[in-house]
Amino acid sequence: MFRIVYICIYCMVLGIMALSMAGCRGGSSETSSSATAGADTGGGKEAKIAIVISTLNNPWFVVLADAAKERATELGYEATVFDSQNDTSKETSHFENILAGKYAAILFNPTDADGSVANVRKAKERGVPVFCIDREINASDAAAAQILSDNYSGCVEIGTYFVEQVGEEGEYIELLGLSGDNNTTNRSEGFHSVVDRFPGLKMVAQQSADFDRTRALEVMETILQGHGDIKAVFCGNDAMAMGAYQALATAGKAEQVKVFGFDGADDVVRLIGEGKIAATGMQFPKVMARTAAEYADEWIKGKRDFDQKIPVAVELVTQDNVGEYGDHGRTAE
Amino acid sequence: MSASTATTVAQQSSRVIIMTQKWITGAGVGVVFLALCWWFPLFRIVKLETLRERSKAETFDAESVAAELWQQELPNALSRAASLSQVSKVRAEDPAVVKERYGRRLGISRAYFLLVRGEGTIISVGHSTLNVSLEDAAAGDVELKLGPVLGNAVRDSVGFVEASQLPNAQQFNDLGAALNRQVETSVISPLKEQAKEGRRITFVGCAQINNEQRDWNPLRLVPIQVSVSD
Image 1 (tube, rainbow over the protein chains, first blue to last red):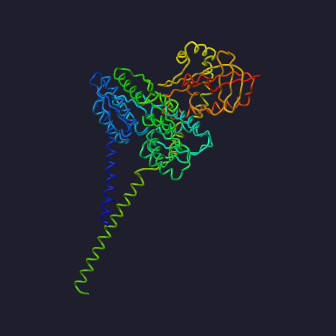
Image 2 (cartoon, rainbow over the protein chains, first blue to last red):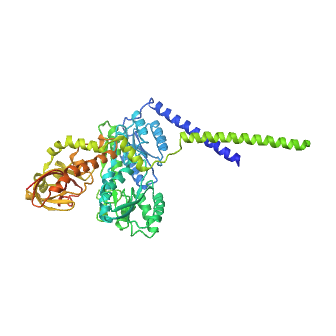
Image 3 (spheres, rainbow over the protein chains, first blue to last red):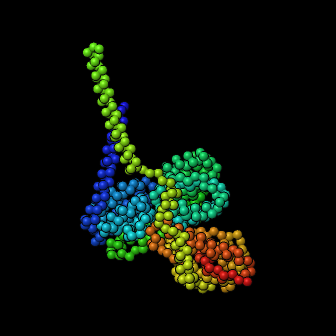
Protein backbone atom coordinates (compact mmCIF):
# COMPACT_ATOMS: atom_id res chain seq x y z
CA MET A 1 0.00 0.00 0.00
CA PHE A 2 2.73 2.39 1.07
CA ARG A 3 4.71 1.57 -2.04
CA ILE A 4 1.78 2.45 -4.34
CA VAL A 5 1.22 5.81 -2.59
CA TYR A 6 4.94 6.49 -2.74
CA ILE A 7 5.12 5.73 -6.47
CA CYS A 8 2.06 7.92 -7.15
CA ILE A 9 3.54 10.94 -5.33
CA TYR A 10 6.86 10.40 -7.08
CA CYS A 11 5.19 10.26 -10.51
CA MET A 12 3.20 13.44 -9.78
CA VAL A 13 6.36 15.31 -8.81
CA LEU A 14 8.07 14.08 -11.97
CA GLY A 15 5.01 15.10 -14.01
CA ILE A 16 5.06 18.64 -12.59
CA MET A 17 8.79 18.93 -13.33
CA ALA A 18 8.18 17.72 -16.90
CA LEU A 19 5.39 20.25 -17.38
CA SER A 20 7.57 23.07 -16.04
CA MET A 21 10.33 22.10 -18.45
CA ALA A 22 7.83 21.98 -21.33
CA GLY A 23 6.71 25.51 -20.39
CA CYS A 24 10.32 26.70 -20.45
CA ARG A 25 10.84 25.14 -23.89
CA GLY A 26 7.68 26.91 -25.17
CA GLY A 27 9.06 30.25 -24.04
CA SER A 28 12.38 29.81 -25.76
CA SER A 29 10.85 28.65 -29.07
CA GLU A 30 8.73 31.83 -29.14
CA THR A 31 11.87 33.92 -28.90
CA SER A 32 13.81 32.04 -31.56
CA SER A 33 10.83 31.88 -33.96
CA SER A 34 10.98 35.63 -34.57
CA ALA A 35 14.39 35.20 -36.16
CA THR A 36 13.24 32.75 -38.79
CA ALA A 37 12.04 33.68 -42.24
CA GLY A 38 8.60 35.16 -42.87
CA ALA A 39 5.72 33.34 -44.53
CA ASP A 40 4.93 33.24 -48.20
CA THR A 41 2.85 36.35 -48.74
CA GLY A 42 3.53 36.57 -52.38
CA GLY A 43 -0.08 35.85 -53.26
CA GLY A 44 -1.23 33.78 -56.16
CA LYS A 45 -2.85 30.37 -56.54
CA GLU A 46 -0.22 28.50 -54.53
CA ALA A 47 -0.64 30.44 -51.29
CA LYS A 48 -2.14 28.67 -48.29
CA ILE A 49 -4.62 30.02 -45.73
CA ALA A 50 -5.01 28.45 -42.28
CA ILE A 51 -8.36 28.48 -40.49
CA VAL A 52 -7.99 27.95 -36.73
CA ILE A 53 -11.30 27.33 -34.94
CA SER A 54 -11.83 27.22 -31.15
CA THR A 55 -13.87 24.00 -31.32
CA LEU A 56 -15.49 21.90 -34.00
CA ASN A 57 -17.56 20.14 -31.34
CA ASN A 58 -20.23 22.85 -31.71
CA PRO A 59 -22.09 22.81 -35.06
CA TRP A 60 -22.13 26.62 -35.19
CA PHE A 61 -18.33 26.71 -35.39
CA VAL A 62 -18.38 24.01 -38.06
CA VAL A 63 -20.48 26.41 -40.17
CA LEU A 64 -17.95 29.17 -39.46
CA ALA A 65 -15.05 26.93 -40.50
CA ASP A 66 -16.77 25.58 -43.60
CA ALA A 67 -17.79 29.05 -44.82
CA ALA A 68 -14.26 30.38 -44.35
CA LYS A 69 -12.75 27.39 -46.13
CA GLU A 70 -15.24 27.58 -48.99
CA ARG A 71 -14.63 31.31 -49.59
CA ALA A 72 -10.83 30.96 -49.33
CA THR A 73 -10.94 28.09 -51.81
CA GLU A 74 -13.15 30.14 -54.16
CA LEU A 75 -10.53 32.89 -54.00
CA GLY A 76 -7.88 30.41 -55.13
CA TYR A 77 -6.16 29.39 -51.91
CA GLU A 78 -5.38 26.05 -50.38
CA ALA A 79 -7.30 26.22 -47.08
CA THR A 80 -6.76 23.99 -44.06
CA VAL A 81 -8.91 23.90 -40.91
CA PHE A 82 -7.35 23.37 -37.46
CA ASP A 83 -9.50 22.46 -34.42
CA SER A 84 -8.20 23.89 -31.11
CA GLN A 85 -10.75 21.86 -29.08
CA ASN A 86 -11.18 24.83 -26.72
CA ASP A 87 -7.61 24.27 -25.54
CA THR A 88 -5.17 27.19 -25.69
CA SER A 89 -2.13 24.87 -25.69
CA LYS A 90 -3.50 23.03 -28.75
CA GLU A 91 -4.10 26.40 -30.38
CA THR A 92 -0.47 27.39 -29.70
CA SER A 93 0.70 24.13 -31.21
CA HIS A 94 -1.41 24.81 -34.33
CA PHE A 95 0.13 28.27 -34.68
CA GLU A 96 3.64 26.81 -34.45
CA ASN A 97 2.81 24.32 -37.20
CA ILE A 98 1.13 26.98 -39.33
CA LEU A 99 4.07 29.39 -39.04
CA ALA A 100 6.48 26.58 -39.87
CA GLY A 101 4.21 25.60 -42.79
CA LYS A 102 4.49 28.97 -44.56
CA TYR A 103 0.84 29.90 -44.61
CA ALA A 104 0.07 33.34 -46.07
CA ALA A 105 -2.72 34.26 -43.63
CA ILE A 106 -4.64 32.91 -40.65
CA LEU A 107 -8.40 33.17 -40.18
CA PHE A 108 -8.68 32.79 -36.46
CA ASN A 109 -11.47 32.02 -34.02
CA PRO A 110 -9.64 32.31 -30.65
CA THR A 111 -10.17 30.15 -27.59
CA ASP A 112 -9.34 32.85 -25.05
CA ALA A 113 -9.41 36.65 -25.31
CA ASP A 114 -6.22 37.00 -23.26
CA GLY A 115 -4.58 33.61 -23.75
CA SER A 116 -4.68 33.80 -27.55
CA VAL A 117 -2.97 37.21 -27.86
CA ALA A 118 0.54 35.71 -27.76
CA ASN A 119 -0.23 33.45 -30.72
CA VAL A 120 -1.47 36.38 -32.78
CA ARG A 121 1.59 38.46 -31.86
CA LYS A 122 3.89 35.61 -32.81
CA ALA A 123 2.23 35.41 -36.24
CA LYS A 124 2.50 39.19 -36.66
CA GLU A 125 6.23 39.05 -35.85
CA ARG A 126 6.59 36.46 -38.60
CA GLY A 127 4.71 38.69 -41.06
CA VAL A 128 1.61 36.47 -41.18
CA PRO A 129 -1.64 38.47 -40.83
CA VAL A 130 -4.31 37.15 -38.48
CA PHE A 131 -7.99 37.95 -39.02
CA CYS A 132 -10.07 37.18 -35.94
CA ILE A 133 -13.58 35.89 -36.58
CA ASP A 134 -16.48 36.02 -34.11
CA ARG A 135 -14.34 36.03 -30.94
CA GLU A 136 -12.02 38.91 -30.17
CA ILE A 137 -8.63 39.11 -28.52
CA ASN A 138 -7.83 41.68 -25.84
CA ALA A 139 -5.41 43.68 -27.98
CA SER A 140 -6.02 46.15 -30.76
CA ASP A 141 -2.49 46.12 -32.19
CA ALA A 142 -1.93 42.44 -32.90
CA ALA A 143 -4.52 41.18 -35.40
CA ALA A 144 -4.80 42.66 -38.90
CA ALA A 145 -8.56 43.01 -38.26
CA GLN A 146 -11.25 41.52 -36.05
CA ILE A 147 -14.66 40.74 -37.53
CA LEU A 148 -16.94 40.30 -34.54
CA SER A 149 -20.60 39.83 -33.76
CA ASP A 150 -22.04 42.78 -31.84
CA ASN A 151 -22.96 40.48 -28.96
CA TYR A 152 -23.81 43.21 -26.47
CA SER A 153 -26.30 45.01 -28.72
CA GLY A 154 -27.80 41.67 -29.78
CA CYS A 155 -28.41 40.77 -26.16
CA VAL A 156 -29.91 44.21 -25.46
CA GLU A 157 -32.51 43.27 -28.09
CA ILE A 158 -33.02 39.84 -26.49
CA GLY A 159 -33.26 41.41 -23.01
CA THR A 160 -35.93 43.85 -24.23
CA TYR A 161 -37.93 41.00 -25.80
CA PHE A 162 -37.39 38.90 -22.65
CA VAL A 163 -39.11 41.58 -20.52
CA GLU A 164 -41.97 41.84 -23.05
CA GLN A 165 -42.53 38.06 -23.00
CA VAL A 166 -41.81 37.15 -19.39
CA GLY A 167 -43.20 40.32 -17.81
CA GLU A 168 -41.63 42.56 -15.21
CA GLU A 169 -41.79 40.01 -12.38
CA GLY A 170 -40.64 36.42 -11.92
CA GLU A 171 -37.65 34.17 -11.36
CA TYR A 172 -35.23 33.19 -14.10
CA ILE A 173 -31.94 31.38 -14.69
CA GLU A 174 -28.91 32.36 -16.74
CA LEU A 175 -26.51 29.87 -18.33
CA LEU A 176 -23.15 31.43 -19.14
CA GLY A 177 -20.56 30.39 -21.72
CA LEU A 178 -16.80 29.92 -21.32
CA SER A 179 -15.40 32.16 -18.60
CA GLY A 180 -12.31 33.32 -20.60
CA ASP A 181 -14.30 34.36 -23.65
CA ASN A 182 -15.32 38.02 -24.03
CA ASN A 183 -18.50 36.90 -25.80
CA THR A 184 -19.68 35.37 -22.53
CA THR A 185 -19.34 38.68 -20.71
CA ASN A 186 -20.64 40.86 -23.54
CA ARG A 187 -23.77 38.75 -23.98
CA SER A 188 -24.47 38.57 -20.26
CA GLU A 189 -23.89 42.29 -19.74
CA GLY A 190 -26.03 43.26 -22.74
CA PHE A 191 -28.88 41.13 -21.39
CA HIS A 192 -28.52 42.45 -17.84
CA SER A 193 -28.27 46.08 -19.01
CA VAL A 194 -31.99 45.72 -19.77
CA VAL A 195 -33.33 43.07 -17.38
CA ASP A 196 -31.66 44.48 -14.25
CA ARG A 197 -33.71 47.65 -14.72
CA PHE A 198 -36.74 45.62 -13.59
CA PRO A 199 -36.30 44.76 -9.90
CA GLY A 200 -39.21 42.30 -10.01
CA LEU A 201 -37.18 39.98 -12.27
CA LYS A 202 -35.03 37.84 -9.97
CA MET A 203 -32.11 35.77 -11.27
CA VAL A 204 -32.14 32.73 -8.94
CA ALA A 205 -29.17 30.92 -10.53
CA GLN A 206 -26.33 31.90 -12.85
CA GLN A 207 -23.98 29.13 -13.85
CA SER A 208 -21.50 28.37 -16.62
CA ALA A 209 -22.23 25.52 -19.01
CA ASP A 210 -19.21 26.27 -21.25
CA PHE A 211 -21.31 26.90 -24.40
CA ASP A 212 -21.88 23.11 -24.43
CA ARG A 213 -25.22 21.37 -24.95
CA THR A 214 -24.54 18.32 -22.78
CA ARG A 215 -23.11 20.44 -19.99
CA ALA A 216 -26.16 22.75 -20.17
CA LEU A 217 -28.47 19.74 -19.88
CA GLU A 218 -26.66 18.57 -16.74
CA VAL A 219 -26.48 22.05 -15.19
CA MET A 220 -30.13 22.74 -15.92
CA GLU A 221 -31.25 19.41 -14.43
CA THR A 222 -29.39 20.24 -11.23
CA ILE A 223 -30.70 23.80 -11.01
CA LEU A 224 -34.30 22.70 -11.63
CA GLN A 225 -34.16 20.50 -8.52
CA GLY A 226 -33.82 23.62 -6.37
CA HIS A 227 -35.77 26.12 -8.49
CA GLY A 228 -38.88 24.53 -9.92
CA ASP A 229 -40.80 27.78 -10.14
CA ILE A 230 -38.81 29.69 -12.74
CA LYS A 231 -40.43 31.50 -15.67
CA ALA A 232 -37.49 31.72 -18.07
CA VAL A 233 -33.91 30.78 -18.85
CA PHE A 234 -31.46 32.95 -20.79
CA CYS A 235 -28.61 31.01 -22.41
CA GLY A 236 -25.43 32.58 -23.79
CA ASN A 237 -25.63 30.41 -26.91
CA ASP A 238 -28.01 28.13 -28.78
CA ALA A 239 -26.20 24.89 -27.93
CA MET A 240 -26.91 25.62 -24.26
CA ALA A 241 -30.48 26.67 -25.12
CA MET A 242 -30.99 23.24 -26.72
CA GLY A 243 -29.57 21.51 -23.62
CA ALA A 244 -31.74 23.65 -21.31
CA TYR A 245 -34.84 22.95 -23.41
CA GLN A 246 -34.11 19.22 -23.31
CA ALA A 247 -33.84 19.31 -19.49
CA LEU A 248 -37.09 21.28 -19.24
CA ALA A 249 -38.89 18.88 -21.59
CA THR A 250 -37.71 15.90 -19.52
CA ALA A 251 -38.92 17.64 -16.35
CA GLY A 252 -42.29 18.41 -17.97
CA LYS A 253 -41.70 22.17 -17.72
CA ALA A 254 -41.08 23.06 -21.37
CA GLU A 255 -44.38 24.92 -21.73
CA GLN A 256 -44.05 26.76 -18.42
CA VAL A 257 -40.49 28.06 -18.92
CA LYS A 258 -39.47 30.31 -21.83
CA VAL A 259 -36.03 29.62 -23.28
CA PHE A 260 -33.93 32.36 -24.91
CA GLY A 261 -30.77 31.53 -26.83
CA PHE A 262 -28.14 33.27 -28.91
CA ASP A 263 -26.44 32.31 -32.22
CA GLY A 264 -29.21 31.56 -34.68
CA ALA A 265 -28.46 27.84 -34.94
CA ASP A 266 -30.74 25.93 -37.32
CA ASP A 267 -32.28 23.65 -34.68
CA VAL A 268 -33.15 26.61 -32.45
CA VAL A 269 -34.62 28.60 -35.36
CA ARG A 270 -36.76 25.52 -36.12
CA LEU A 271 -37.92 25.28 -32.49
CA ILE A 272 -38.78 29.00 -32.48
CA GLY A 273 -40.97 28.30 -35.51
CA GLU A 274 -42.65 25.49 -33.54
CA GLY A 275 -43.19 27.80 -30.53
CA LYS A 276 -40.90 25.78 -28.25
CA ILE A 277 -38.09 28.32 -27.85
CA ALA A 278 -38.91 32.01 -27.40
CA ALA A 279 -36.10 33.80 -29.25
CA THR A 280 -32.49 33.84 -30.32
CA GLY A 281 -30.04 36.40 -31.64
CA MET A 282 -29.09 35.65 -35.24
CA GLN A 283 -25.37 36.00 -35.74
CA PHE A 284 -24.08 35.76 -39.24
CA PRO A 285 -21.22 33.23 -39.15
CA LYS A 286 -21.09 32.89 -42.92
CA VAL A 287 -20.89 36.67 -43.41
CA MET A 288 -18.10 36.92 -40.83
CA ALA A 289 -16.15 33.96 -42.22
CA ARG A 290 -16.44 35.09 -45.85
CA THR A 291 -15.47 38.66 -44.94
CA ALA A 292 -12.38 37.36 -43.10
CA ALA A 293 -11.36 35.28 -46.13
CA GLU A 294 -11.86 38.27 -48.44
CA TYR A 295 -9.83 40.53 -46.13
CA ALA A 296 -7.03 37.95 -46.11
CA ASP A 297 -7.09 37.90 -49.91
CA GLU A 298 -6.92 41.71 -49.99
CA TRP A 299 -3.99 41.66 -47.53
CA ILE A 300 -2.10 39.14 -49.63
CA LYS A 301 -2.67 41.39 -52.65
CA GLY A 302 -1.21 44.40 -50.81
CA LYS A 303 -3.95 46.19 -48.88
CA ARG A 304 -3.00 47.11 -45.29
CA ASP A 305 -5.48 49.73 -44.00
CA PHE A 306 -8.20 47.63 -42.37
CA ASP A 307 -10.37 48.86 -39.51
CA GLN A 308 -9.24 46.95 -36.43
CA LYS A 309 -12.79 46.10 -35.26
CA ILE A 310 -15.64 45.39 -37.63
CA PRO A 311 -18.82 44.75 -35.62
CA VAL A 312 -21.41 42.57 -37.35
CA ALA A 313 -24.99 43.28 -36.25
CA VAL A 314 -27.00 40.55 -34.49
CA GLU A 315 -30.70 40.38 -35.31
CA LEU A 316 -33.51 39.26 -32.99
CA VAL A 317 -35.36 36.15 -34.20
CA THR A 318 -38.81 35.51 -32.72
CA GLN A 319 -41.99 33.76 -33.83
CA ASP A 320 -43.00 36.99 -35.59
CA ASN A 321 -40.09 37.03 -38.04
CA VAL A 322 -38.68 33.48 -37.92
CA GLY A 323 -39.66 32.94 -41.55
CA GLU A 324 -36.99 35.44 -42.62
CA TYR A 325 -34.15 33.37 -41.14
CA GLY A 326 -32.49 30.02 -41.67
CA ASP A 327 -29.22 28.38 -42.64
CA HIS A 328 -27.31 30.71 -40.29
CA GLY A 329 -28.49 33.94 -41.87
CA ARG A 330 -31.36 35.60 -43.67
CA THR A 331 -33.17 33.34 -46.10
CA ALA A 332 -33.52 36.16 -48.64
CA GLU A 333 -29.73 36.39 -49.04
CA MET B 1 18.04 -15.41 24.71
CA SER B 2 18.72 -18.02 22.03
CA ALA B 3 20.72 -17.28 18.87
CA SER B 4 17.64 -17.64 16.63
CA THR B 5 15.62 -15.19 18.75
CA ALA B 6 18.45 -12.65 18.58
CA THR B 7 18.53 -12.99 14.77
CA THR B 8 14.76 -12.44 14.56
CA VAL B 9 14.95 -9.31 16.72
CA ALA B 10 17.84 -7.99 14.60
CA GLN B 11 15.86 -8.63 11.41
CA GLN B 12 12.78 -6.88 12.85
CA SER B 13 14.90 -3.89 13.92
CA SER B 14 16.42 -3.70 10.46
CA ARG B 15 12.95 -3.84 8.86
CA VAL B 16 11.68 -1.06 11.16
CA ILE B 17 14.68 1.12 10.21
CA ILE B 18 14.08 0.53 6.48
CA MET B 19 10.35 1.30 6.88
CA THR B 20 11.14 4.45 8.85
CA GLN B 21 13.59 5.58 6.14
CA LYS B 22 10.97 4.97 3.47
CA TRP B 23 8.36 6.93 5.44
CA ILE B 24 10.78 9.82 5.94
CA THR B 25 11.66 9.82 2.22
CA GLY B 26 7.96 9.61 1.31
CA ALA B 27 7.07 12.43 3.67
CA GLY B 28 9.91 14.52 2.20
CA VAL B 29 8.65 13.97 -1.36
CA GLY B 30 5.13 14.78 -0.16
CA VAL B 31 6.30 18.04 1.41
CA VAL B 32 8.13 18.97 -1.81
CA PHE B 33 4.98 18.17 -3.80
CA LEU B 34 2.77 20.24 -1.49
CA ALA B 35 5.26 23.12 -1.63
CA LEU B 36 5.23 22.98 -5.45
CA CYS B 37 1.41 22.97 -5.42
CA TRP B 38 1.45 25.93 -3.03
CA TRP B 39 3.80 28.02 -5.12
CA PHE B 40 2.69 26.78 -8.57
CA PRO B 41 -0.99 25.74 -8.16
CA LEU B 42 -2.37 23.50 -10.90
CA PHE B 43 -5.50 25.70 -11.05
CA ARG B 44 -7.11 28.61 -9.24
CA ILE B 45 -10.79 29.15 -8.64
CA VAL B 46 -11.82 32.75 -9.30
CA LYS B 47 -15.43 33.95 -9.18
CA LEU B 48 -16.68 35.28 -12.52
CA GLU B 49 -17.90 38.45 -10.85
CA THR B 50 -14.49 39.05 -9.26
CA LEU B 51 -12.81 38.55 -12.62
CA ARG B 52 -15.09 41.04 -14.33
CA GLU B 53 -14.74 43.66 -11.61
CA ARG B 54 -10.95 43.26 -11.57
CA SER B 55 -10.75 43.56 -15.35
CA LYS B 56 -12.86 46.74 -15.32
CA ALA B 57 -11.04 48.31 -12.40
CA GLU B 58 -7.62 47.66 -13.89
CA THR B 59 -8.26 48.96 -17.35
CA PHE B 60 -11.01 51.44 -17.97
CA ASP B 61 -13.09 54.00 -16.11
CA ALA B 62 -16.06 54.29 -18.46
CA GLU B 63 -17.90 56.84 -16.31
CA SER B 64 -14.99 59.31 -16.37
CA VAL B 65 -14.40 58.86 -20.09
CA ALA B 66 -18.12 59.35 -20.81
CA ALA B 67 -18.28 62.49 -18.65
CA GLU B 68 -15.22 63.94 -20.37
CA LEU B 69 -16.51 63.15 -23.86
CA TRP B 70 -19.90 64.59 -22.99
CA GLN B 71 -18.34 67.86 -21.98
CA GLN B 72 -15.82 68.11 -24.84
CA GLU B 73 -17.53 66.48 -27.81
CA LEU B 74 -21.23 67.17 -27.35
CA PRO B 75 -21.22 70.67 -28.98
CA ASN B 76 -19.71 69.18 -32.17
CA ALA B 77 -22.26 66.39 -32.22
CA LEU B 78 -25.16 68.81 -31.75
CA SER B 79 -23.96 70.90 -34.67
CA ARG B 80 -24.03 67.78 -36.91
CA ALA B 81 -27.66 66.91 -36.14
CA ALA B 82 -29.86 66.93 -39.25
CA SER B 83 -33.18 68.76 -39.37
CA LEU B 84 -36.12 66.36 -39.04
CA SER B 85 -38.06 68.43 -41.59
CA GLN B 86 -35.30 67.92 -44.14
CA VAL B 87 -34.88 64.22 -43.32
CA SER B 88 -38.64 63.67 -43.67
CA LYS B 89 -38.71 65.38 -47.07
CA VAL B 90 -35.86 63.20 -48.32
CA ARG B 91 -37.51 60.08 -46.89
CA ALA B 92 -40.78 60.87 -48.65
CA GLU B 93 -38.91 60.87 -51.96
CA ASP B 94 -36.64 57.88 -51.32
CA PRO B 95 -36.16 56.17 -47.93
CA ALA B 96 -32.86 54.60 -49.03
CA VAL B 97 -31.28 58.06 -49.38
CA VAL B 98 -31.88 58.79 -45.68
CA LYS B 99 -29.73 55.81 -44.73
CA GLU B 100 -26.94 56.86 -47.06
CA ARG B 101 -27.02 60.60 -46.42
CA TYR B 102 -27.92 60.89 -42.73
CA GLY B 103 -27.42 57.39 -41.31
CA ARG B 104 -24.38 56.21 -39.43
CA ARG B 105 -23.63 52.51 -39.59
CA LEU B 106 -21.46 50.40 -37.36
CA GLY B 107 -19.53 47.68 -39.18
CA ILE B 108 -21.64 45.25 -41.21
CA SER B 109 -25.30 45.95 -40.44
CA ARG B 110 -28.75 46.61 -41.88
CA ALA B 111 -29.48 48.91 -38.93
CA TYR B 112 -28.37 52.55 -38.88
CA PHE B 113 -28.32 55.43 -36.42
CA LEU B 114 -29.69 58.94 -36.84
CA LEU B 115 -28.87 62.19 -35.07
CA VAL B 116 -31.68 64.69 -35.67
CA ARG B 117 -33.11 67.96 -34.37
CA GLY B 118 -36.67 69.24 -34.28
CA GLU B 119 -39.22 71.41 -32.53
CA GLY B 120 -42.87 71.09 -31.75
CA THR B 121 -45.54 70.81 -29.07
CA ILE B 122 -45.79 68.14 -26.34
CA ILE B 123 -49.08 66.34 -26.92
CA SER B 124 -48.84 63.63 -24.24
CA VAL B 125 -46.59 62.62 -21.37
CA GLY B 126 -46.45 58.96 -20.30
CA HIS B 127 -44.48 56.94 -17.77
CA SER B 128 -41.54 56.25 -20.07
CA THR B 129 -42.14 58.41 -23.17
CA LEU B 130 -43.53 61.76 -24.28
CA ASN B 131 -45.04 62.47 -27.70
CA VAL B 132 -44.28 65.58 -29.73
CA SER B 133 -46.26 66.95 -32.65
CA LEU B 134 -43.61 68.54 -34.86
CA GLU B 135 -43.98 72.13 -36.05
CA ASP B 136 -43.51 70.88 -39.60
CA ALA B 137 -46.71 68.81 -39.75
CA ALA B 138 -45.44 66.89 -42.77
CA ALA B 139 -42.71 65.43 -40.57
CA GLY B 140 -45.34 63.77 -38.33
CA ASP B 141 -44.97 63.00 -34.61
CA VAL B 142 -41.97 61.73 -32.68
CA GLU B 143 -41.62 59.90 -29.38
CA LEU B 144 -38.97 61.01 -26.87
CA LYS B 145 -37.66 58.53 -24.30
CA LEU B 146 -38.29 59.37 -20.63
CA GLY B 147 -37.49 55.96 -19.11
CA PRO B 148 -34.25 54.01 -18.82
CA VAL B 149 -31.98 54.47 -21.83
CA LEU B 150 -30.96 51.07 -23.23
CA GLY B 151 -28.78 49.93 -26.11
CA ASN B 152 -26.24 51.93 -28.06
CA ALA B 153 -28.30 54.53 -29.94
CA VAL B 154 -26.55 57.39 -28.11
CA ARG B 155 -23.01 56.02 -28.42
CA ASP B 156 -23.36 55.11 -32.10
CA SER B 157 -25.30 58.18 -33.22
CA VAL B 158 -22.94 60.77 -31.76
CA GLY B 159 -19.87 58.71 -32.73
CA PHE B 160 -17.56 60.06 -30.03
CA VAL B 161 -15.46 56.88 -30.11
CA GLU B 162 -14.99 54.10 -32.68
CA ALA B 163 -14.86 50.42 -31.66
CA SER B 164 -11.27 50.15 -32.91
CA GLN B 165 -10.09 52.86 -30.52
CA LEU B 166 -10.58 50.62 -27.48
CA PRO B 167 -8.81 47.31 -26.77
CA ASN B 168 -11.98 45.24 -26.46
CA ALA B 169 -15.74 45.24 -26.95
CA GLN B 170 -16.40 45.21 -23.21
CA GLN B 171 -14.93 48.67 -22.81
CA PHE B 172 -16.80 49.93 -25.87
CA ASN B 173 -20.04 48.60 -24.36
CA ASP B 174 -19.23 49.99 -20.92
CA LEU B 175 -18.76 53.37 -22.54
CA GLY B 176 -22.17 53.05 -24.25
CA ALA B 177 -23.83 52.25 -20.91
CA ALA B 178 -22.03 55.15 -19.21
CA LEU B 179 -23.20 57.56 -21.94
CA ASN B 180 -26.76 56.29 -21.41
CA ARG B 181 -26.50 57.07 -17.70
CA GLN B 182 -25.09 60.50 -18.55
CA VAL B 183 -28.16 61.18 -20.71
CA GLU B 184 -30.53 59.94 -18.00
CA THR B 185 -28.94 62.22 -15.42
CA SER B 186 -28.27 65.37 -17.39
CA VAL B 187 -31.10 65.37 -19.96
CA ILE B 188 -33.97 63.05 -19.06
CA SER B 189 -34.28 63.82 -15.34
CA PRO B 190 -34.76 67.57 -15.89
CA LEU B 191 -37.01 66.89 -18.90
CA LYS B 192 -39.36 64.76 -16.75
CA GLU B 193 -39.87 67.71 -14.42
CA GLN B 194 -40.55 70.18 -17.23
CA ALA B 195 -42.61 67.99 -19.57
CA LYS B 196 -46.26 69.03 -19.66
CA GLU B 197 -48.88 68.79 -22.40
CA GLY B 198 -49.10 71.91 -24.52
CA ARG B 199 -45.55 73.16 -23.80
CA ARG B 200 -43.17 73.83 -26.68
CA ILE B 201 -40.02 71.76 -26.97
CA THR B 202 -36.89 71.90 -29.11
CA PHE B 203 -34.67 68.86 -29.05
CA VAL B 204 -31.76 66.91 -30.50
CA GLY B 205 -32.21 63.15 -30.35
CA CYS B 206 -30.69 59.80 -31.36
CA ALA B 207 -32.51 56.95 -33.05
CA GLN B 208 -31.69 53.39 -34.09
CA ILE B 209 -33.49 52.19 -37.19
CA ASN B 210 -33.61 48.38 -37.38
CA ASN B 211 -36.81 48.11 -39.36
CA GLU B 212 -37.94 50.78 -41.85
CA GLN B 213 -41.67 50.08 -41.38
CA ARG B 214 -41.72 49.72 -37.59
CA ASP B 215 -39.14 52.27 -36.41
CA TRP B 216 -40.48 55.36 -38.24
CA ASN B 217 -44.07 55.15 -37.00
CA PRO B 218 -43.42 57.04 -34.83
CA LEU B 219 -39.71 57.79 -34.82
CA ARG B 220 -38.39 56.96 -31.31
CA LEU B 221 -35.64 59.24 -30.07
CA VAL B 222 -33.36 59.35 -27.06
CA PRO B 223 -33.05 63.09 -26.33
CA ILE B 224 -29.50 64.36 -25.78
CA GLN B 225 -30.44 68.04 -25.60
CA VAL B 226 -33.83 69.63 -24.87
CA SER B 227 -35.29 73.04 -24.19
CA VAL B 228 -38.87 73.38 -22.93
CA SER B 229 -40.86 76.62 -22.84
CA ASP B 230 -44.49 77.81 -22.53
